[in-house]
Image 1 (tube, rainbow, N blue to C red):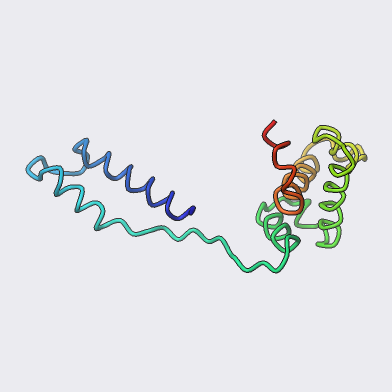
Image 2: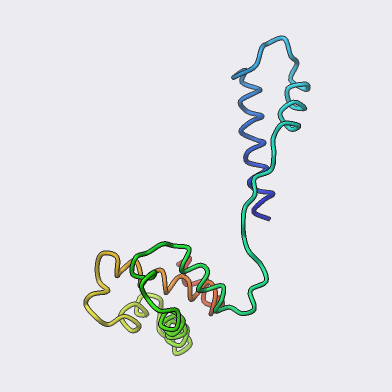
Length: 139
């Protein structure tokens, strides 16, 4: 799906450039320009691995892909535990706004890279471990 979107966007940009005359001579008609553009565009490879055996693997993959220093220095077991704690808090009726204070009560999670770490865990957990709460991210 993402690959099709990327191809469509690249095609639209290239088409717009050619139709505006950018980079082309005016002696070539528009239909020929469109064919030339679509024949020369190569699809971009968007790597989205598949085959995760469980939601925790996908959660860890996403977490480590963020390159947050705090996340990178936190053991996987702790990341998974915090993710499940987020889901349990939501299961017990906590709102998104109160999850941060519940899961990360220490003052160190209130600023800098630590707050980014906390939000990365919360968003990642909701996205991968308890997606039934995705609606709270949109509020």
